[in-house]
Length: 398
Length: 136
Image 1 (cartoon, rainbow over the protein chains, first blue to last red):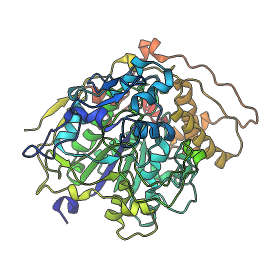
Image 2: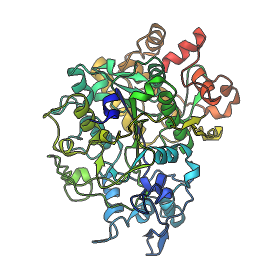
Image 3: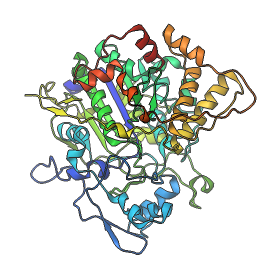
């Protein structure tokens, strides 16, 4: 066991919404390479996708914070299938532009799916990526939308679902929170506020309110050294005003919500840990639930089957899905004073089932009653390899 | 030497509660309604047309299925609890708050602290502000 893992008392996971790795971090290509190899696997600038006329559309660093990806790019199973396989056999990741074109039949709009952010436009995410550990191969668990992917972060499976219908209560595998509760280990889902709420609703909220808190409570728990062993944070999913009249801008980064507000939220979560003594015994994973239909150049790999089958009617593709391959790559960063600066995680494949797998291994140990996908998922706490807590960790000024 | 990175503010123009409800929020509401039904039986459902309406309805549902722990928040949640009805009720229109600059004058303590680069810990708030925040 590393010193960092021995010191670890709190793991915090922040799951954002609907942005691909290349869209957010592709501009950091090659950064933190050692002797020219092993750096961040982003974009060279030469990547293309054909439009409906067969004309290549190049990636461009023209991504904007808001107003660009409207309508919301389709990211249901059938659309993602087209994004990955639409270029024909042996030509994967070539269907993003044509998939987005399907929504409006507008060539100029469709090519925006290839846009990515200049790194300096995302000072929070890019600095966390370069200062701590960035995963070159963290994929969505399913080539599909939000709720089935988030289910993998909570349960290690979506119980055969590839869409947005998640009535899981009472199913065979318990959520990570229920497992921890049974083991006498503290955990909590912190949602932003009541007007944003939690996406983990029908499964555990109704029966286990003690597992839930708001973001304000998270900030207080950090300050008062009362953070549970495991925390899962949900950003603000809605633009809304509260009872005092104050307005709150959605911070989930779901298109077409403003990406900068998400940056500020990530910074708030980080600062809440960083500015308190709890920091030296904590690790923060920032990860996105799925790619939101936005381009990424890495082909999702095959994975051990989950034991479930989604029928053609559910996939919308005339083919059943056996949960034997992953969704599109997403940004994932692990921040902790115990992580050496500039770590790039290569040669290992992670997905959202890695989250309950890591927490279970860390807090419970041997635990057989979980999905095949989770049992086979990579865990990530071995990355806390610094010989002592770093004193040079960045801070964000909001 | 600790590097301090300045994070620019989000422009006020980003705020748009009149934005069309996303598929994610629609699914979110269905899940919350199912949870409410599990606890309270059949109640009126709403189908919000924009994000402002959706967030108000989500708040109402959340406070029903997850009553807040402290007294002030519990009282607010109780006050917001809708009357049981078998009839679907229309969703009132929510005006975009960005039309009203005055709303920005009452920033909650956490946002004030964040904006000034201060501690992430919320500052002490007035009783009225605590009640407002507790509802969140």
